[in-house]
Length: 136
Image (cartoon, rainbow, N blue to C red; front, top):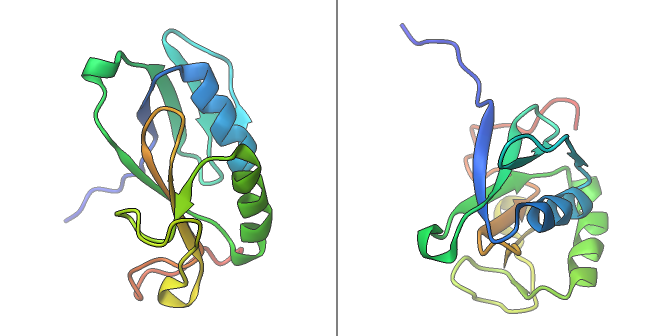
């Protein structure tokens, strides 16, 4: 018998916790919460909190975070991404610089956030059996 659980929060390593939290909040339309201890929290749409923490360069390792957004929101997100001037590409290994992908019948893009984390934003989940939320 499985246990009922939900993902509550993630600690996101950053060069500067405030800079990274503001970047995500602007780019993805999230709200920044009240800073507490070493964390600057950002609440996502499904209730998972991203707790941005400043971590020294020598202790930070590349992380990968993928965000699923509705297709109707992709154009606004993508416009904000281009405004940042951050390099983006269609593939996870830097393939297709300056391009997006159309994997699984949707759209997606890869880039590095200010903290050096690998970010992926997609409009269709990879696994066909996983459905987007009904509210989309």
